[in-house]
Length: 89
Image 1 (cartoon, rainbow, N blue to C red):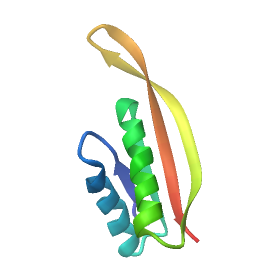
Image 2 (image 1 turned 45 degrees about the horizontal axis):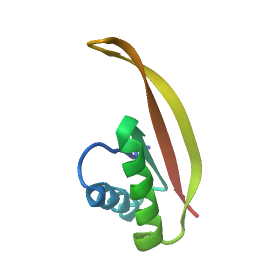
Image 3 (image 1 turned 135 degrees about the horizontal axis):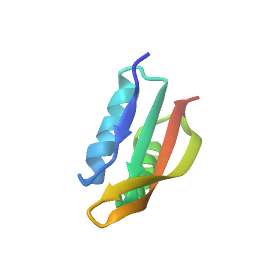
Image 4 (image 1 turned 60 degrees about the vertical axis):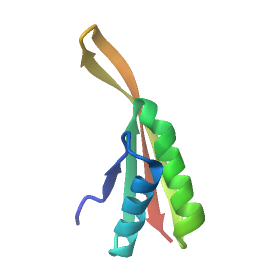
């Protein structure tokens, strides 16, 4: 099984929506949308737009949140992360 993960960053939301929809159209049973920090809201937008406008028979199966410790110039800092799993019904 291939790992169907879309990592959300700073690109426009529709780029990620297209990536999610494309993976389901290529036969994926499950797609994960992952993001950290300020990109979390973009990941949520991506998921909602994909589900409400483009995908039928797909639901959110799991939402996982966590905190990762990241090294920066000013020392260690906590960065929130989210993983939203979408599954075909």
